[in-house]
Length: 402
Image (tube, rainbow, N blue to C red; front, side, top):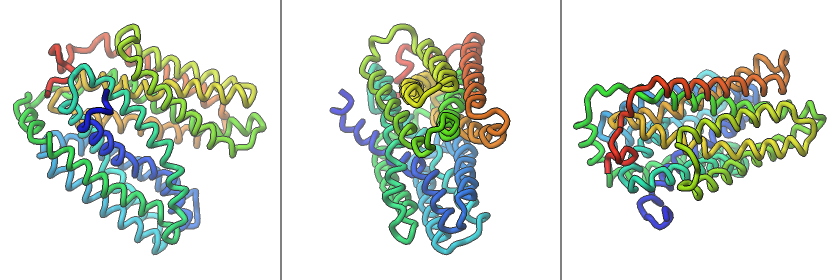
């Protein structure tokens, strides 16, 4: 069992501590803007700046982690993140203007954006090949746990320290994450650096990866649209929008359950990993369409839960497939770009909501999201039909570094 492996437990602790400040950031920044600027609306701009930093920083920093000594690069990234979070605490407490806050938020989002990708790469040194996909499934489930718990943690911490408690909590989590990550990296970074150096210097990065990135964009748009349209959909059903929070929590819990079931039954699922991913994306599309047609609160809740079952398994499938397809010397960048693309999908969902809600309504936006998700799934299938052979095409393709 994975839980019996001490190195895997340390790795899982490190990567989820790294994710915790990112998961806390949206609500924490909204509340921080309410305190510093007196406007939750401007808080949306801070969240956008943070997400933009993630999208910009992930591929660049990921490539740096692939090329530079891992521990040294991680120290710089964690140092920048901690300094930016500390500056954010001081800026919020001082009530500074929006522009400086947005600049600090952008840096805070960019600094650690590639670290989970680097940790995903180290997982290949920790586990045997036959356990790696199950570990990625467990990781996808833990990811949903972190994102489900983060808003509650923000709500608990925010009143402390004059309203900056959540930001201080993010800072503390980042410092602890740095210590945990550097401890994990110390055991494996030397071997990773040696293998990166002997890899082909100019391996084509996108070879075979575009289908995974298309699926990631589809998942980001679909999941993002479901979350952001729930308040408007409930309003259309004459249900209080305050139930949007519990429904989003239900969605996250269903995703956790889906990830646990997927991982436990992994050896017994029929079909190839790619076909399972296609089926899950189509199930997500069907869930969006069913939600758009939902006539009652009960059906809405059931549909949200059933749709949530697809998310963690989809994350697991994408991670396993990218491990298989991406060149070994570019894994940190590949995983960082995967995360950035999904973040961009979320951001696009929010942008579409802001631009088209008045004209299309919540149901129309869900139908549009279903169409975009289906397009992403179809693009992923088509891209696989024209791809070149896998970058890691040895029999131990999921574990070539061990």
